[in-house]
Image (tube, rainbow, N blue to C red; front, side, top):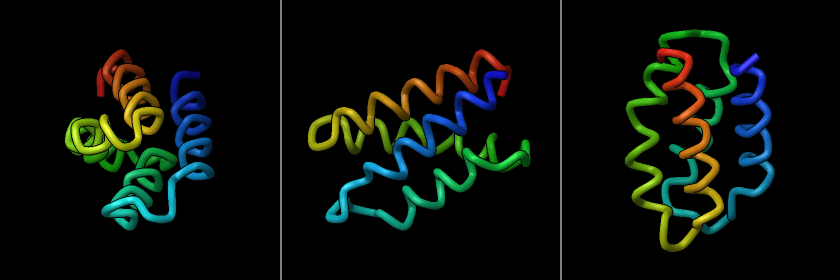
Length: 79
């Protein structure tokens, strides 16, 4: 059930990622990893999410907030 919520949030983020965002390819790869069923990809994602949150806090606060929500969900899942 929590994984379903992660996928939903990742899908919503994907629809709203600004075209002019720095490292857009990396953000898209992160979203791909978050939408995956592969546990190793989810673990990889949890390692890079804090970097993205810090990077986007000022210019893209909604994106940072959504990534933080995903990080909390994954953490609560034990990932």
